[in-house]
Length: 117
Image (cartoon, rainbow, N blue to C red; front, side):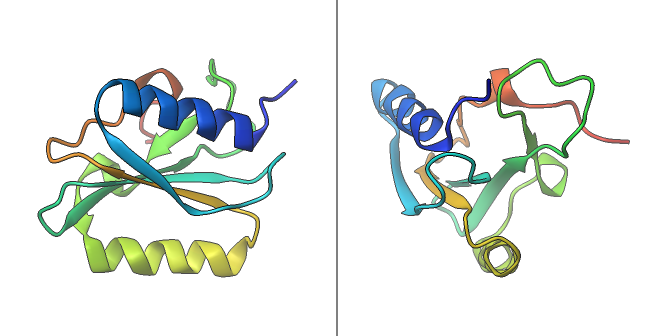
C-alpha cells in the first residue's frame, strides 16, 4: 500500500524542521495520491527541483520514489517557476513543497532514484 501524499509531506516537513530547515506547502494537492514536487531554494536566485520518479521503475526501493530534475543541478528560480507552472497545468492535484536551504540540503536521499540514462 502506498503512503498517502498528505502523510508523506507532513513527515517530510517534520524531518526538515528537526534539522532546522524551513519548509512550507506552496501548493496543496490531492491528500491521497497527488504527485509531489520539492523545490529547494538556495536563497541565491537558484533552486534544486525534485519530482516523482516515472511509474513502473523496477529499481524503486522506496515508497513514493523521487528523482532529481535538471540532472540534479540548480536552475534559475524563474526557470523553476515555469517548470512547476507547466506541471500544475498538466496535473491539478500535485503538491509543491518549498524548502529553504543555502547549501541545498533536502534529506530526500532515501527516496531518490539513480539518474536515468
